[in-house]
Image 1: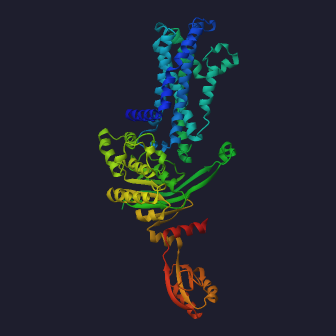
Image 2 (image 1 turned 135 degrees about the vertical axis):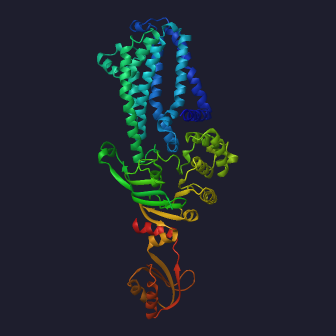
Image 3 (image 1 turned 90 degrees about the horizontal axis):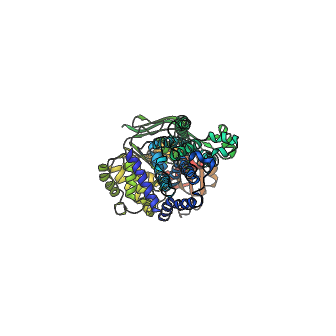
Length: 268
Length: 335
């Protein structure tokens, strides 16, 4: 299995590198936002915002974490469906499905490259946060932060698998990613806390896993929150994971059978 | 001889989605039946051509056999294993080689393509380092192995796709129109390659979808005619021609005026078509062309009738009907 994953990552890296200009732009775009961060820090670094005091009060750190999680959740949501769509459009999907590699391994393998790229971007952002914004390592409670992140990743990947199933059958117009990405940017507290929203919108925001993940990660990274401090968010994310994972596997498998039945695996 | 492929009453319907209404009211969608109860038996080691015009269902049948499309009804066995629900149990015994050039990774070299697919076929590193150069040599791409596939010609891409299919040393090879995008010389080269390397040297069971009758006759022991989703015949070329047409075509060169006899000959039993040319283009004089039932007794009856009508008979020739003509006749009659 690891060899399968590695060869698919190698293939995508090789293909990405063959588009030289795009590869350079992508690489530069990973570090470019650090410049933005420097100027934001100059403009707003000393400003203390009362409404975010429970996260340490520094707005740039607050926003940085929101943006990082949202960007990563967008990648997780769309990686499977994008990779399937790319394989459909380039025409390699049927040939890949005809190998001895198992379907889940193929899907994960085909999505590894964007994940690696986005993980790198996330690491640069967070690293930049420590260097540019002077985030203190002492405020980070690493174990709860990692637990929140992994649970959130599982939820996003499950939803991403569901979106991939949609792509297999309908090819374009995946509503899962559209709703979750559009909804989360507006409702999940990416650049402002959820508390500032009208009450009825706050209720809707609670239905989005990103809201809980962003809040828990801010608390664990910026305010040294413990497992018990973020237990509510962990339970909610765990609930999402328990519900979404089997549901998405089922949905994807139904979509796969549907595409094979309609003979539309290679259509795009 | 053991059967490599056996299908029984395979039916495949595709939904027709021609309007937004079909998407919204999906339970009311109409279906079009593209395979109508296919019964096909291909013995091991035999090369069979699946012939038929565009839209006959050739590619669909190959994909159903490969497990890429699930049948709606029927039963499929590959080397004695039930694979009706997909190809998951085949473990490389059967390979489908698409005519789709894009199924290769164009921005990798030929060798890199084989490396990626060999790894995904779970070949060990040592197997890969032995097999990949061997296959590149077999398909004549050793010199071009480092070139990006996007710089390959159509023929080279097709040969690379075949090499990819052979990575698992399959017993059964499903080839979908391997010469579709090749020029005549390239197609001839491909035929030679398939016959000498795949059929004669490796003894692979071959099911080849094509609409080129010359290709089918050159490469295959038998032909299976697929027409509008139905398997109309499956036998040797000459047997298939008689099965498809059920008639023979004769030319009778005559002396004297035949006009008066044409109507009465047409009325004879077993006569389907009579054409009279008073002055044949080949300069052999007047001639009658007849399309008559395949029966030894018919033509003497016609000759007797002509003689009785005072028409001289200068010669009689049976016209050999080619496979292409027979298929064309079938399409003309049924479309």
